[in-house]
Length: 196
Image 1 (tube, helix red, strand yellow):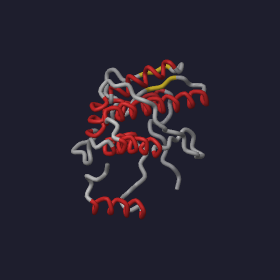
Image 2: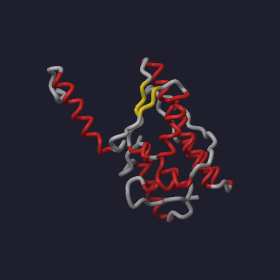
Image 3: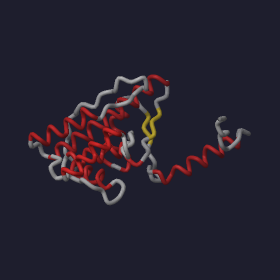
């Protein structure tokens, strides 16, 4: 499935990962979508941010997906998911000759269910049941719709942006809202700099 990647490039990547040279750890959902699109043969190199994720969403279409493994990591940090079993399941499905569209649909279903599982666990731990679906990943209409439905079924109050994009462009508005709230309470708009 990675046969389309030049052997020399693969070797360089393996060496970078082993030495951690120019291969930082990533926890963004965008990189998970990139990896899935690559494993399914949809996109090896993106020309712009989100390209692989959009192609993965389009590939999935309206098909129903199965649930693949996406377990919690044994970690002191709560609710950290291990993407390796999910990526291995996609690779194994591709090796078997499964339709990439079916695998793309299963990837979306799995990510949506995992997101709601984490949100439900966080709600149980904190007593808060309000969930805001925001960030670039929620520009994916299929994922957003599925999370909204699954979250409501799980007893969560699900919110999504209506007037602004869920993407990073709206971060500055949130920062301004926090600053305004702090000023109205008589506290500094910006958090004090940490002591060194």
